[in-house]
Amino acid sequence: MSKNDIKDNLDIILDDSSNLSLNQIRRLLSKMTAPEIAHALESSPPKQRTLLFSLLKTEEEGDVLFELGEEIQQDLVSNISNEELIEAVKELELDEIVDILQNLPEERMDKILSNMSLVDRKRIEIGLTYPDNTAGGLLNTDVISVRPSNSIKEVITYLRDQGDLPENTDKIFVVNQENEYLGELSISKIITSKPIMLVREIMETEFLPIDVDLNDKEVATLFERNDLISSSVVDADGKLIGRITIDDVVDVIREDADQNLLGMAGVAEDTFAPPGRAARSRVFWLSLNLATAFIAASAINLFQDVIDKIVYLAVLMPIVASMGGVAATQTLTIVLRGLTLEQINTSNIRWLFKRELAVSILNGIVLSILVGFITYAWFQDTIIAILISCALIINLMSSVVAGILVPLILRKLKQDPAIGGSVIVTTVTDVVGFISFLGLATIYLI
Image (tube, rainbow, N blue to C red; front, side, top):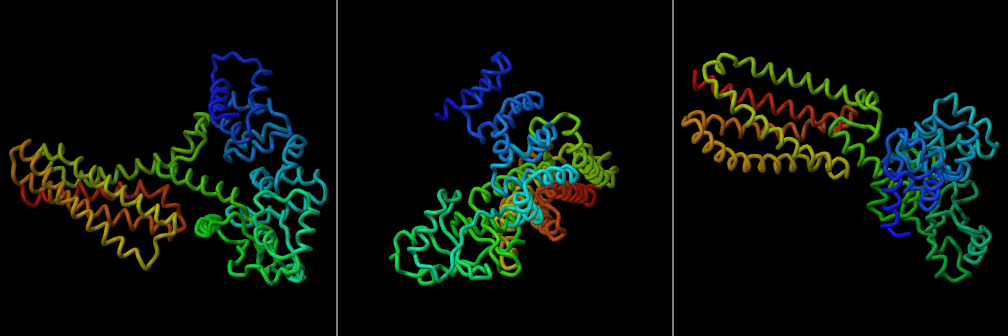
């Protein structure tokens, strides 16, 4: 099916005026892949979403649930029975099943596990022991391993006996009798090596396995830096317990990007979430922003006398604060990107600070001259023009300090700098902008 056909089907399904019967919608859904159906569900309001999901076959539901965001996934799972959920996820990979089940209430999860076969239950319980933001939460147990004493001929025979290999199998892993990781063997090496050669002669030992407790973002960084398709995962004793594949890492990268984008605005919700839920998710950050607004207002109130005497200072104040806020957000974005990509560390943060400070001074000089000329042309007052130019330079310099230090401090405090950073740096530049401009005005005009 072409991209245009997929888009047409999606548009038809989501169009309230199309007046399709349930059977017609079901036929359209049957032509779409799980990610395409998930996209259709995420693009639908709650009632329409529930209807579309109910039209899926049980064996399709598991694949679609895995492709959905956590909030929508939980909503849909809450509306189906335990028996249906067990049937829906039974063909999924271990990490996919764990991703779905770990968000359930503990009581319901226990009931579902108790109704599964002993083998499946043990596999899933192993996956559930690891936090979802670690390598253990990403791993699959569908791992193929061989011994270093095996010949390539024996390995090829063993692989043929497996039938279909697990998805994204670009390598197999080498272990000893205690299942301790020793190295890896690429499929290409197996194909091109002589059958009489031993595994130990051609296996790779340079790339270290991933520790099961490693943070998922660090896992994504390893995959990106080393162009990996799959990698082994070991426990604290160095024993091979599974592997991570590139499709799982792509999900981590996508989720992290979504969180950073929404976090910059203090929002983390389904696009079509009900009004009550959306309001609850936003009210905290709106309240925090309100508190910081009062802080800025208090800074202005300190200079009430000078504003009363020179009213047009109130007209010019937002210019200084706004320019500082935008400059701080630019620096904050650079720092957040560097932190996410792990490019910023103690050895280069000083250089970055000096670079951003130089940028702010250069921009400050250019913009202060421009603002000074406009202010003079507007109010015919040389002193006011000079004061606002000086205040602008001061605030742009403060924006660098806030834009760099705030995310670093939040990261140190184990807080997400993408969520709280923008609120704090804007407050800092507002307060500094008001105090610098009105303070200078108080000194030189009163």
